[in-house]
Image 1: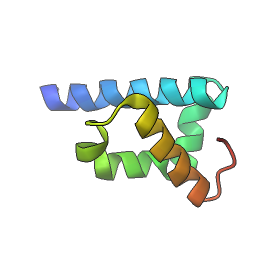
Image 2: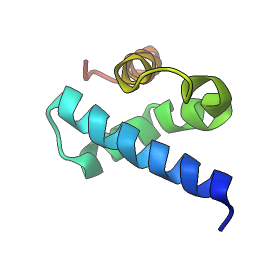
Image 3: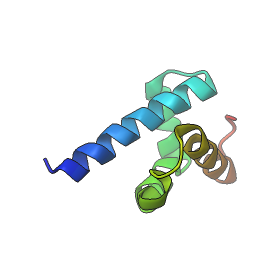
Length: 74
């Protein structure tokens, strides 16, 4: 596995964990929520920009994306 792939995976795992804390759910539930409401898709498409921001800022962005797509967690 290439170094960049490991970095992306590590960053994604960290964001899912931070999202779980923010939403008050388990990491598995946070991942399912982000996937269902297109937060993971947004992260995948905009990783180049999002990884330069802080975790709290990126979690805010992903929460907004999910809300815009019908999600109810804040």
